[in-house]
Amino acid sequence: MTATPALTAPLVVEFPFTRSLGPVQSAFLTGLRETTVLGVRTSDGKVLVPPVEYDPVTADELRDLVEVRATGTVTTWAWNPDPRRGQPLATPFAWVLVRLDGADTALLHALDAPGPDAVRTGMRVGIRWAQQRTGAITDIACFEPQPHEEELQAPVSARPHSGVFPGPVTGIVAPARLDYTYAPGRAQSAHLTALTERRIVGERCPRCRKVYVPPRGACPTCGVATSEQVEVGPRGTVTTFCVVNIKAKNLDIDVPYVYAHIALDGADLALHGRIGGIPYDQVRMGLRVEPVWRDGARHPDHYRPTGEPDADYDTYKELL
Image 1: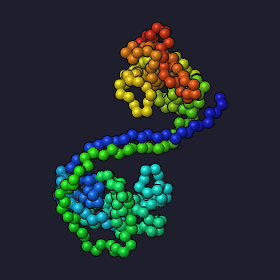
Image 2: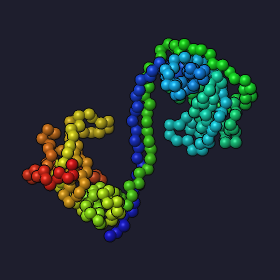
Image 3: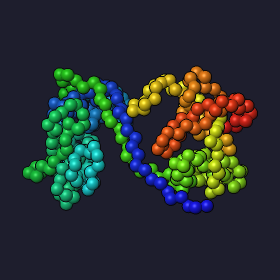
Image 4: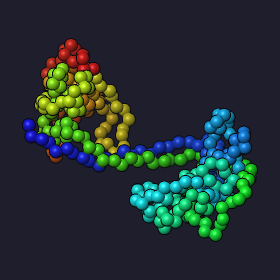
């Protein structure tokens, strides 16, 4: 058996996260838009910045908003020599925890500094406000050193604040994104390589003799390594399925459509696939299907009925 080189591919998981804001977070983010930093006072007198709606110790509801200063002290830090997409600054910077004057907790943000030698615990910093502010944490562009300000010798008291601003921010949309490199490993690399040749390959367990597609490199039942490659299918049987009624973004498939578990002939594990070539309400358990490939595709586009009689339930009941 010829060794298949392991594959890698850059992948991105990205979606917008939309949430509404309660009175405390609404006041905090609206305050940032107005260059005002708000915290909340707990029952024992501590000021939390950023504010939270419930006391982390007693779980009491918190509504006593206070204003703290836009200057503070670095409590700890770490240098970031290679900023990533979406981070506060495009040039190297320090991640810092800053206890703003009047607060008892620290706020995480970026510090614009020329290098790690210019950063130290205890240094005094101040907020650099963004020129365009919308009511988000990014309204704080970053922190910057305050070279002529000495560390405070006496605590500063936070001032009471109503939390009322014109045009309050009531909701936010936060983009969530994860960039990573996926390495499928030896077994799945062989499977993916075979797909480019329009073949479907799994691996057989040397102990229980079951064939797994896609292969995992080890038998999930016996826990032993697998290496014997077995070509399966290409035809198979629908074991279970669901009807999709919500159209996915950037997916050019009309709804409703069917997504199914398909037990390929010769395989002991069902894989996922979309069912086409048949009305969605005629898809059924036991339906015999075959893959449909598009030119240049690395995997089947969908599965369609073969025209064969439905498979008997006893032939696939163990693969549900």
